[in-house]
Length: 624
Image 1: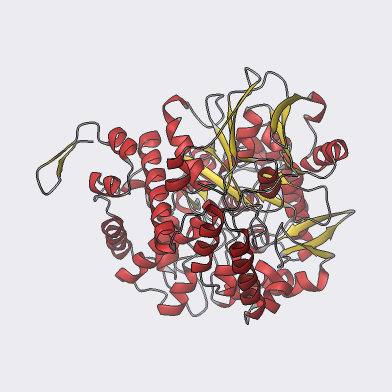
Image 2: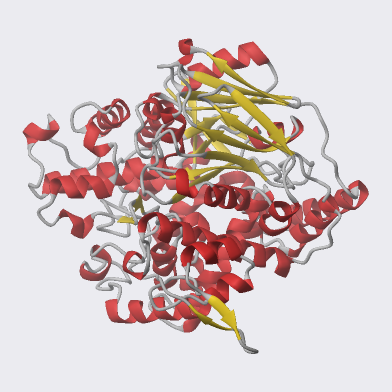
């Protein structure tokens, strides 16, 4: 199949790199990016002990549309068994890294074991080299980026900060902090920075000048031309250019879904001060990813430096912590990037701590100081304590679930996580489809897999109909598909671009004529494979597709949605409908029939070791 590059398998302990071509099935059935990550981790699952053990495998993969010149073709997925959740985890990042890696001739890196000394990888025009360099260890992502950029010139760099080195469970990976013209991006969720740190891997440098083997370049140019025209003609284009995701603060506050004070409230009295309009009026400049005409990186000045802010940062570090000014939120955001920790998880952990302190569940002696909502300087100190695992920061560094286990005394009632991953910035007590999205998300609660709250607002906030489950499943297939293709999803989700155009682009690049429906079937295959990984690794099933007790017990305190909670009985019925539509059993496990339908024969053999197909009607006998 055309349009693909090579794979490099890196053994850090042995100092060995083996380069190979991807096999036909990997390209055909798993497309690229997140799809390759899931399949490659599944193939290595038996040997993986836990998230920060040397046996864990870190996969870095782009997709076939990355680096081709196609609009938004810039995405890269970092994936492994998550140190935070113990199941499959991944995080997708934009910027220039995927572009450069593809131009260097590689679609995927499979990184094994642990280097004996701090090192970085150099991916450079057909070669991958392991470079020992202890001088970078202890540096911030920004400083390490600067040193490496001086060394290698025009490149893209993924680095970890001190939090990754110290294996904070939700440590992030920063991409291209050191160059103003490019969007500084993070692979934030599920602790991929901690995986790099556990491998003594400080950075990955990608530098390439090659071209992509595109099957039909003229067709791709024509499809790209149409896409650009549609983007510019979208009624939302001007506002998206102006505000990017930051305008979601106004929207979420207006529909009463903005997380406030650890999801106690849904409306924030200081929302205007941290809104998209406030960002626009204060921003220093905007930045864009590779192959993009929509510069959605809105950059604020913090002291003598700069930071990109987006909605999730404004929500989880702003309203959720009670910070009252944009400058305070920007500084908290900057510190998270500087140390290399996920802003969503950090905001959730600190908010949980503040509520515990308010309730008298954590004493001043344990924390070292008193704290309440909106105390910016103390929040900055907590970020530093988490990154360095100093004092109570060592507990906070493990995530909300671990902190609740430490505090006990009923604190789990308001520990806002699913499967160990902190919930991102949408209150969902009055948004049943969004609640289902969080409960069933394959990596733990995360909005990027299924942003269903707009559907709730459109059809009814508190309905539990079959349509809600259908909508969530559709979104869980189409949204991750963009990560598989290696392309940004924002033109589709924000500017209402017809997604069929991405199937046309894929067909032009690969030479394999493919419909959107066929691509979505590949995405469904990956979703089911990740569920199998979760079951095999940690026994994840229906019992884990649940939400924090707060969602069912604590009514929304004000506004038009005042008094609303999720209805546990109706939600459980909706969850059963979801399983039925997915072809899973009542325990939330993919059935043999579904795995066979998707061509996941290896997963079938692992999940159901005693099964056989018999008779004309292909009935199955199996046992867990």
